Image 1 (cartoon, helix red, strand yellow):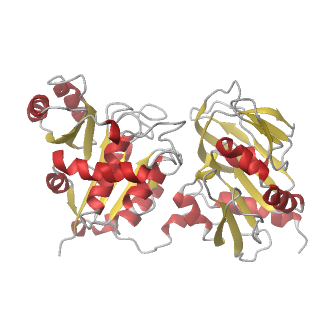
Image 2 (cartoon, rainbow, N blue to C red):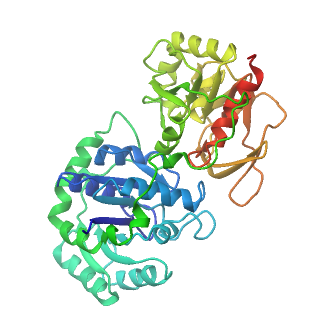
Image 3 (tube, one colour):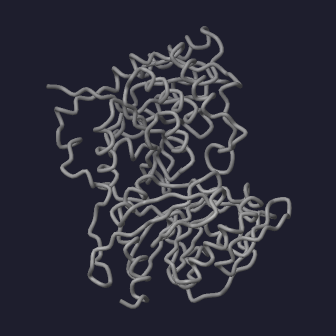
Length: 460
């Protein structure tokens, strides 16, 4: 008995071609056909996955071959793809752009997972010249299969006919186009797409889902990307649903299994999360959520996680919620285990200054201050070596440290090419904080090491 599913990766020659717009519309349009649709994002972007979740109704997932091993990426993909009718992966930057040549690129992931590639091409100022562009993308690397193309910013049928001719002459199927439409535009901010209460993402995604089927052949898209997974059972079927917790867990310092109360910040100010990381945390205990913006007291917890986000956009509200600040300050001051990344680090500092020069008091757990004034972009993969443990992640922010305390470096941090960077892992009592967003789903030993730091200090 066959089990036909569709799977494809949406890629482009460069950024700003319309990958995310097309992906969101396809996710919703296919979902409205009654299909179970699983979205993936190539690379470290945690903003696009939020929109993917909105469009598909399922958690968006990251596929990143720099932050995690190839084996882990295969496991993540097969685990979730096996539970969906259609798997759609959105590429990162241009098809072959990676951290080091093709390393971590959309092409590498397509080859690793044997996903056919569907190109999205900005054809606003292009007609038959699309032919050599598509030909190059199709033939540059023999490990990938470019099977179709969808064109963006096409306003007339006559324009599209030139593009169809280009596809036919290089052996790639033209699957349709999207016309230029400002109503389908999603504003950009920082990394990837903007997240703002001022933008009605649901309305835009729904409009895309209505527009796309008019000019894109969805039936043909599903046909040319269908795969018979029953013919390759080892590729999809897995024995253990706990696959995200791969690798060996180091033993707790006291040798006893632990089931912790793990409390995670999640609201408009703190939303930059890797879904696989959260699934990994569930192996260590019960996960609960809270809002530093709206709640008054931190729930009873054994492990506090403050992820990144946009605290600078909500600095006044965060500062005004003194009850929550006091609760978190007391928890950390009494030796509670806490881990903060990027926006979480900014929140735990003494002060946050926004781009207009307005300074807001923060939790004051860490003796540091951050500012968005005269800011500079910090971007790139990171590798941290800490007590013999290697963990990888990604750093992207415009804020900078205005003041910070001096400590003996806890860990060595480098970029993708092994060059030392200034990023630090800070520690005050049992509170740890860094600007890097780490991906630990394939390295649960990182979480166990954090837990052991607290356990080693606590009387038993």
